[in-house]
Each structure stands twice: as C-alpha cells, then as structure tokens.
Length: 58
Image 1 (cartoon, rainbow, N blue to C red):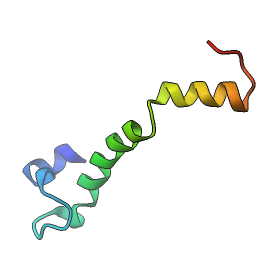
Image 2: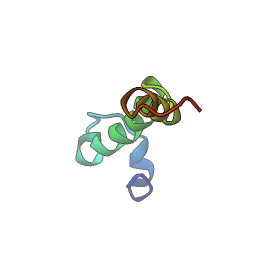
Image 3: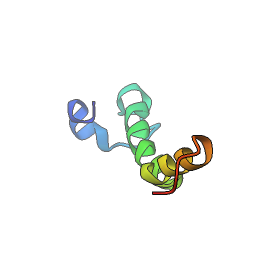
C-alpha cells in the first residue's frame, strides 16, 4: 500500500493531502514501533514457549 501511495506515503497522519487521512502511513509506522516496544518476536516466542507451554529454555 505504501508503494501505491508514492510520495503521499510520506505525509503525516491528519495532513489534508493524505489518502484516507493517513491511516495507512500511521499503521505502517506503528507496526514497526510496536514490535520494538514490545520486545523482539523471538523473545516473545521464547517467553510463551517457556512460561505458557512449559517448554525447556533453549
């Protein structure tokens, strides 16, 4: 979706020239930030495996 929007994908959410109010840009950027804020995917998988599934540490 970001490639389709071209130069418009660089605009901030809420800018009058964004497509769909900047929802795509915001979602794209937040998806990266969310993975960093919550820890890496591998760390999260290890925690689930160890604590929830009772798998050995590895």
